[in-house]
Length: 193
Image (cartoon, rainbow, N blue to C red):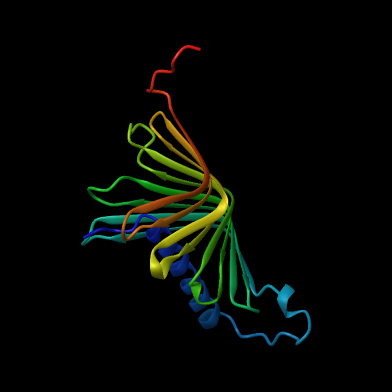
């Protein structure tokens, strides 16, 4: 069975959103918001958020943290500042996702990561560690797809690929670098000119 790399961290964002909504509905009285200026109204803010999910049967651990979570009731939008997600599974490389900002839309069908987005697969000491860097990544958890139309850099060992636009299908393992693709591998000797 093939497991998704990007879906796991996004699942935590969805679980975090659902838990936050449940707590808000059960622990606080509903305040009626005035009809005007709803888009700017914030119904709650959580600072220094961190959590752990452990599935003992599957021996899976997931950790998440954010400096701040802000929820807007109009449109059911959740924003996270300085979000960090880590997934640990047996026989799978460590997976870390870091972004300055994350935005979950109504129903959590779309997650938008922005500003200094990095996805790191593997420990820092692993020679097969893969790092993807971009300023924007659109994750669609239900379809296990991630995409960007922004510049992206993929680093593995001594190889570096740069492109504009990327499409990743984690179900099939397909990674498509879309345009202006350049690659360099330091292991390949360069010819003298």
